[in-house]
Length: 254
Ligand SMILES: Nc1ncnc2c1ncn2[C@@H]1O[C@H](COP(=O)(O)OP(=O)(O)OP(=O)(O)O)[C@@H](O)[C@H]1O
Ligand SMILES: [Mg+2]
Image (cartoon, rainbow, N blue to C red):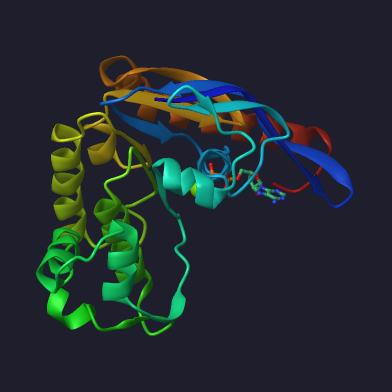
């Protein structure tokens, strides 16, 4: 189980303090698939980076399996069983796809085993196992390879940041099946997916809406999903109308 207690994250943006995450508390229980959603710039990826240890919170504590991991770095957290797939994955020049999947699995996988992970994300495995993870891979290919490495990890907590981004529709359908299979076989582990996609929201046990650096609302899928589309559109429209009115008062052109 992962627990965030009163997490804040502040950065120095052009000489001014900017609080990106404000006093966020949330729990990812074992055997659950949790989806975090919310508007662009709300702080979702920052939260994922704080969980993975890529960023350190400026306030609050993070617990994993009851242990305080706030001071642990990304490698230590990975060893403890936290696996993270970036919204924009990084490339590894000089490393083959096969090596990357073997490193992720932490054991001597056969080529057939590695290929199975690649196939599950819609890649024709034999075309990819020997490819280098460099700039010659397209964005969607890279994204799918990274998801395959997280699947190979079989981590206690798997975090996927917008797994749908840049992925074609056919592979996306496949991916939903993969997540659903993961969901059915998660045993003592849990899955955290950041997503805007209705089909991913549809397989969540719980949905957390993060907006303006805070948890706006959270609850079961049944409770939260119906509030999402109309809710988001209404908020965006209200904010936009307020803006336009303010501009009108200032005499600016709209
Ligand atoms: N190091 C930083 N310095 C200044 N601002 C930052 C920094 N990192 C993130 N931000 C800002 O914090 C906010 C939250 O960013 P974040 O990437 O977490 O959003 P997000 O919810 O993942 O958005 P999206 O849905 O577009 O992926 C954004 O306004 C972003 O510009
Ligand atoms: Mg993001």
